[in-house]
Amino acid sequence: MTVPSLGISARVLSIRARGGTLIPPANPRLVGWWSDGALPGAAQGSAIITGHTVHDGGGAFDDLDELSAGAAVSVTTGRGTLNYVVSSVTIYRKKALAKQAARLFDQGVPGRLVLVTCEDWDGTGYLSNAVVIAVPKKA
Image (cartoon, rainbow, N blue to C red; front, top):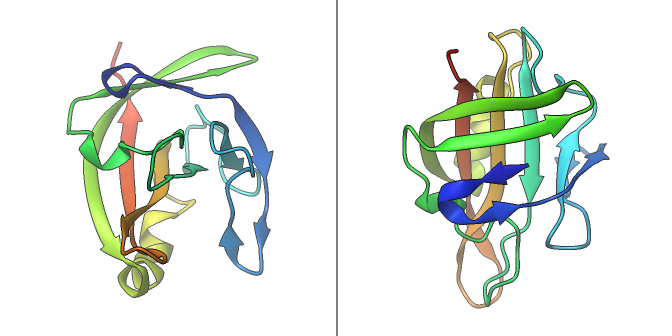
């Protein structure tokens, strides 16, 4: 997966939710795709990819909150490279994200990519999540 405007190039691993929570791969330079959701490139559903933010640097998604609408995101699969365009970037407090989860991670919507990471380090933990929604780039 690449996000050229942020210099992100990360390998994507298949992950599953544990106790209702998606936990990115332990290596902060890798990102995880939720294997119970849509595949990237699917005509329907949210393909969810999560990655770490590391408060002192080194996480694949450290600067995800700096993306803006129109930014390019690409995911390479066995079927080729899929190109997306960012449509929104939103910061949600942890409780607000939980309330919005059904809408954000909806599997009934037209195919899209949803990128998620932690945000707002307070010295002991992260208070929020950055959520990026990207839609397939029109040919």
